[in-house]
Length: 291
Length: 291
Image (cartoon, rainbow over all chains, first blue to last red; front, side):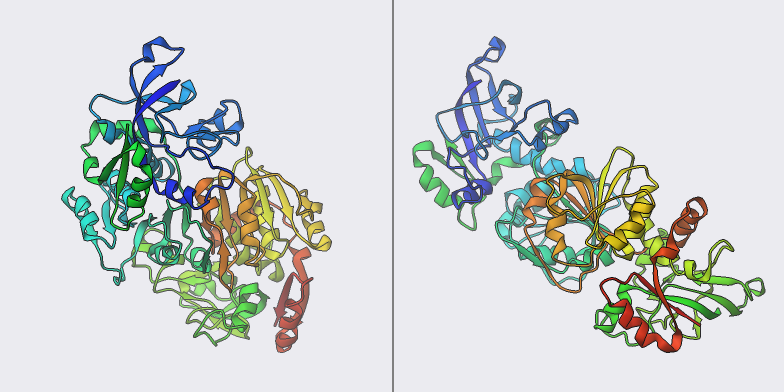
């Protein structure tokens, strides 16, 4: 399916890719986007506003058969592994990855479907309920989206970060926030979403015995830590990556999320270099490219 | 309850404690034992052959109320935290930790109740079924006991180690074994039981996407690793420590395990120093002290 791109978001992974995080990929980045279908075998799709699942799976391997195409060893990944991404005038994707964007979402809001799906993945992997005390560490885009998703469970939620501006977006949405790193409290579930490998040991120390640490950050560097704590306290560490777009769309159909407030700036595509520089800034949240 | 000790096993934790693994503990070690009750408020216990749960919990905190006394923050741990252990003529334990040793078990076999309970803990924490391909890494005492426990689930099981002698105990019990570290296969569940921090990265690499790595080893030193693999492949890492003695006894009631073959040597208590030196040897499995 050939899609004319309307908007594409810059993700931290795109910034990491520029630094060589994905050896062997030097193609067009961009895996968060919305566009209009220009060409498709399915004529009903032509002219429709769509996005596409980041993972394009083979459909036949043991993972695909279990509904885990996002772990298909033969998969291509939009703008990351063996497939040109959406930071371009046009992007071409397999028909079975195309997802219609609901009319209720703007082109800009639609770039959040992919990262929101990644946040929703936590609820696919572990049970979170109102009895749980949950801490999210990191007030970047991912930490905020994870907080929005976890808030829907009714759990007792705290978001910890360093940026008052970013935390205020969560606070205005009814989420308790803190910049205090000195408290002694421990949590049933801690979500590490800082992207900083130094945060791992700290996050582990904040989990109660028999609790769960969810790792959303892909650290570019090695982590050094004392894993004996995880054994003695029988902590479960859950690596968590991509989610199902359908989960994100179902969530957006039922909850108003302040996605527009996560947009720091928009740039025309021909100013992509400038846009990337802006996205690298500490205070930046989502930077969007527009065609 | 005052117990006259008949036998006590030397565990790797005891060897680590000698090296200072538990800061602040310089008391009598020993948490695997069998003995005869000499004094007890419960007169029916007098003269009974017993052992005792390693964790003595407060019974009132949030963990105790959930049946997780082994994570009670106020607990004492026999021969490890704030309680003198069983490598002595007598040991004194709280009444609610006392567990009767079935007549079917010898004094020597009874020292395996505690480590076998720790192996059983894996089945309390994760579901293992006949559809799972499972790898246990490490052919020491713990790796062998873990293999015996996992074998009962009917899973497809492979034990990997370096010692033909030790592996033969598992092989004679019907467990597939290997010394080959070069294969390319990956597993649904990998259990790391080597005690060697360098083995962690290797174990992680052998887990399938969405699979589980069970950590049974408490590493004395820090681990350096690339945790991005756990995130990208959404691997769950489960720290696993002590188990319930009742699980071990139920298992022993239903399965004949070659526990005697795990006994490398027995020493009288007054030769404990010699016994520890023997237990330190690479080829040693369980060394038992006898009164």
